[in-house]
Image (cartoon, rainbow, N blue to C red):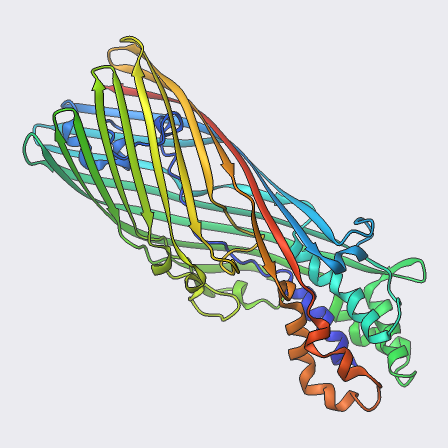
Length: 507
């Protein structure tokens, strides 16, 4: 019976598993993007990131841009799972809404360009993915569901409502950053063509701190330590053969506090190629970024979860997908421009760690690669003021089962819009202002066996079923996988808004 109860603790520990939802790129690398996202074919200092080859068509000399952005984001996950009704704060509801909060007060970016005759170079620094701390004060569905399964499992084995509720202190804080510096050099071939080659140095840093503590179960109208209740259950189900005190000692360690404190980091290089073609009122560009091999190494101070993904010293794959970015700009009038762009990410070709298989094959779950479509307008109201507006759509290929994402880390397809202005304070100094709002779509992930809890229990109990079936009548039927699998779903939704101010200098 000890091994039966151990299943509840195994499921509980599995709640601490952190499954990344794939690589998400921050393309808001300049305030100009906030006011008009279609920057792929831009000819300006912000091209140090968006269009390095376009630097070849700027005026000779030095160009510098610096900006600071403020970002506010919320992540909402509504988890529907029948055992959640046992939660003392859930008021009998088999669903719960979890909120993750992220606020970045100041996110800086720097772009620098130099051009002399046909030779040019540029540098960009910024946070190209991640960029904040997300805090879940109530944990997440994937954290709470295994705890919720404990009352359901005990009641199923006992054949009565022996446990009527649960409570636990569950929390998680996660930080994800990719600090990147990109250096490009280029050559303007003639009045139409320019090319550039470069490399981006990425310092990737993920930090997870989580805990699952003070698990209590409601028994006979009282909230008691889970070990005491589980011990009593073991004693009852063994027909008194195992004294309660002995049983409590057996299961105490199984429902003890679980803690995680892990820092993942790596340094990786991304080669970047860029070409620009300019003719008359048109400008066209293409940028290709190679797939970047990333192996995050764990520096773990605490991991009592039993989850090997966070073992100290272990390396897990988190490649940055290669991508191709196309852009076009057309000057309808000297003071009125339209720009278009398209970005395609080779997600299925970038290796990601899969906690289910302990292999770097999570990318195989994707249905198709992700892509973006961008468009924008710019109008020079005068020699001093330029107004901008633009939008972009992002589409992800998670597929119907969406095994690639989890409630810990995810994004959904979205439509974004931005607007703003450039103010030319002097012939050599400009001020950029922008605001950018993203409207995410709801995405529902359905699971026939929520969190795989039923399958886990069945697999762990299979070796001991033969030993227990004779002493506990009906146990084999109760622990049949069909009776343990409980369906559930997660509804994912996010909100995001970014605002920024920047300065551009020519000298």
